[in-house]
Length: 498
Ligand code: 6YU
Image (cartoon, rainbow, N blue to C red; front, side):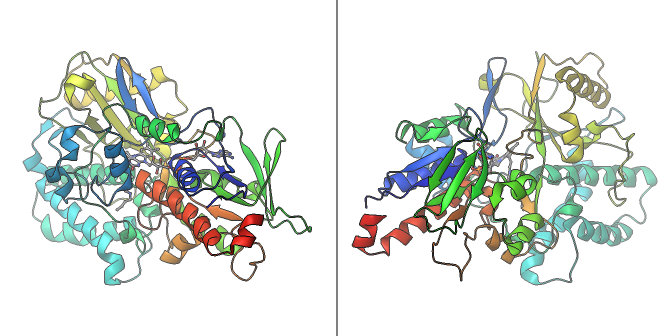
C-alpha cells in the first residue's frame, strides 16, 4: 500500500507514536504528529535525582509477558535486565508483584510488625477482591467501590473485632485507612467513592512480574522515535481546534487549527490527548462539538491525580530487605468517610514509600506516593516546603529527629497543562458502553459520507488496559489498523485518488 491521505496525530505520547509507527509501516506516507510540548513521551518521562534516574511518570511494565506489546518491544530493543526476560518472571501470575517486604511505622513513632496488622490486611484484600468480582457476579447496585467497602467493612468489623480493645481496633482501622490510600494511588483517584463499582472489574491484568527499565522508560520512546522518518513530529505545536465534518464541497474534510494560528488540512486525525485535557477543553477542541453520548461517556470516566515524591538519603533508615514503607495514622478510622477538612495536613494522604532497587543502581532513594486533591495541593508548594513536610513526617513516624533527606524531586501532573492529572479510572455509573463510546470514531454511523474523520486513541480509550502504557500502545495500533483496513477495503482506483 502506498497511500497519500493526510493523517494528523495529535500528541506524541505512546499512543500517538504507536499509531504513527503502524501507519508508516503500512505504507501511509503523509503522517504527521503535532505535539504541544518540546519532547516525545507524554506521561513516559524519565528525570534525574542527583546521579540517579527516576521515573516522573510511568514506572513499570505491568504484566511483562508475551501478551504485553510493551514488554515485547522492550525485549526486542534489548532494554530490559536479563532477570525480566526469564520464563519464570514471565510466568508469575499475581497481578503485578507478590506482596512486598514491608517496614511499617505508626504516627506515634512505633515500628509495627506486619503480623500485628494481618487481620486488617486480610479483611481489606477480601473486600477488594469482592469489588473486582462485583461486575461478573452481578451484585446489588452500589454506587462506588468506596461505598461498597465501607458498608461491608462495617458488618465485618462488628463481627470480627467486637471483643477487641479500643487500641487494637484503632490500629487495625488505621491500617485499613492506609490501604485505602494505596488503592487511591493505584487507581489515580481522590477517593474510592469516585470509582464506579459496576465497571471496576473490567480492568485486566497480564501475567509477569512487574519490571522497570534500567536506563529509564524513555529509552523505549527513543528507540521507537528513531524508527520514524525525520521530521514526522512538529514540537511546540499545540492544537487549538479540530474542525471536522466540513460541509462545504471541499475535498478535504478536516482542518486542524493550531494555537499559533497555523491551519492544516487532513483526511483523518487521531486524537490522543489525555482524558484530563479532553474533559477540560472539549468545547473548544472540536467544532462542531462532540455528540452528546460521547461527551457523557467522557464525563463518566474518571481522571485523577497520583504523584510521586522521590527522596534521597545519605544512608538508609529502613531494613536492607525492605521494599515498601507503610505509614499508619492512629487517628484515622476507615469506616468514617474522610470529611474534607482544610485543617487536615495534605501529607496525611501519602501512604508511604517504595524503595528504589537495586541499591547499587539508585543509592538510597525512596519514592513517596500521594493521590487526590492533597496531591494536587502538594503541587502548588515549593520543593523546600515539600521537603520540610516529608522530613517532619519521617521523623515523627520513626521517632528519629536526626533523619534528613539530601534532596527531593516530585511530579506535578495535575498542573501539567497538557495532561491535567495522571491517568483514568472507571467513574461512578461508568459502563462497558461508555468505554466503547470513548473509542468510537466520528462521524458516528449514519453519517458515513466521509467516514473515520476523527479517531480517538490514548490510555483512557482502552476498555481493559486503561491507565497503562500497554493500553496506550494498543489503542494507537487499534486506530491505525482501523484506517489500514478502511483503505484495504477500497478499490485500487479509489486508492490511487486517496
Ligand atoms: C504503566 C506504570 N504509572 C505513574 C504516573 C503517571 C502515569 N502510568 P500521553 O499523555 O503520554 O500523550 C499525550 C500527548 O498529547 C502528550 O505528549 C501531550 O503533551 C500531548 N497533547 C496534549 N494536548 C495537546 C494539544 N492540544 N495539542 C498537541 N498535543 C497535545 N502506566 O503501564 N505503568 O507504572 C504507570 C504511572 C505518575 C502519570 C502512569 C503507568 C500511565 C501511563 O504513563 C499512561 O497510560 C501512558 O503513558 C499514556 O500514554 P498516552 O499516549 O495515552 O498519553 C483494578 C484496577 C485498577 C486500574 N489501575 C491499575 C493501575 C495501573 C496504572 N498504574 C500506574 C502506575 C504507575 C506508577
